[in-house]
Image 1 (spheres, rainbow, N blue to C red):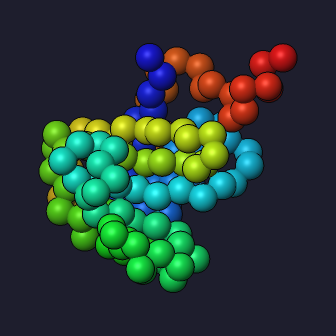
Image 2 (cartoon, one colour):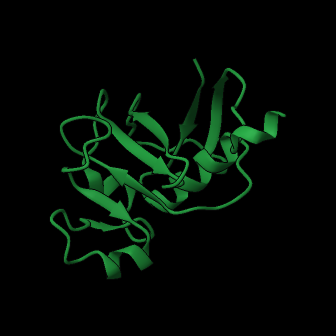
Length: 132
């Protein structure tokens, strides 16, 4: 199993969470991504939060985006302990991550956020041919 525990402030955005995950897994090449909320962690019919450029071009879809990652604060999502949602990175290589909410606190400890507080397992390479 490979996982990362990342502590965030509520006023940080989904874009901030993306960058924290991106860095925590040692990714180096940016790609499109989105966050999916719904009945399960990867529910394509649930609310989706996308990049600003995708928000503009996808409005005519069956499941239009609910918002933009750069303007949606974590605290605005109404998350509670036990909630799960999906993070889909690189629509070609399809990196799917399940994000589990482990804690929600009223007071924010001092320090710089987001921050990785736990790592389990070695990050897989961003591209399969990196192992060769």
